[in-house]
Image (tube, rainbow, N blue to C red; front, side, top):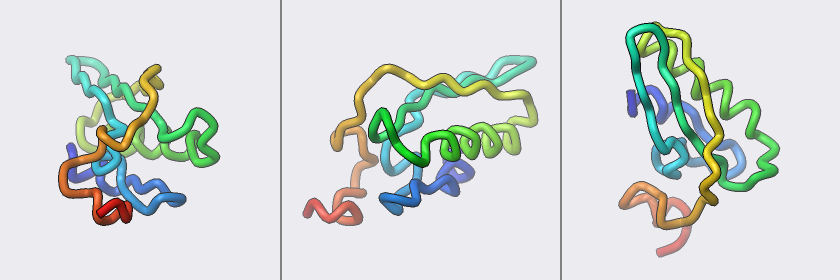
Length: 91
């Protein structure tokens, strides 16, 4: 699943959903899947596209209808996947 979600890249930042730590939870049931994700900013201009792409990629893998929930966490650099900092230009 992570490999497929790595295909969803934030075009403004150039990093994928897993690197950024935006996918917060994934639940797969018998009849549907549910993803909780956040955006890097509440008013991300690419938010609708990112949400739809995460939904579509999840459905490709699990072959189940998938709902997306936007979590209420505020994104922080500490949520990034370990080792992603150089791509962000932090180190």
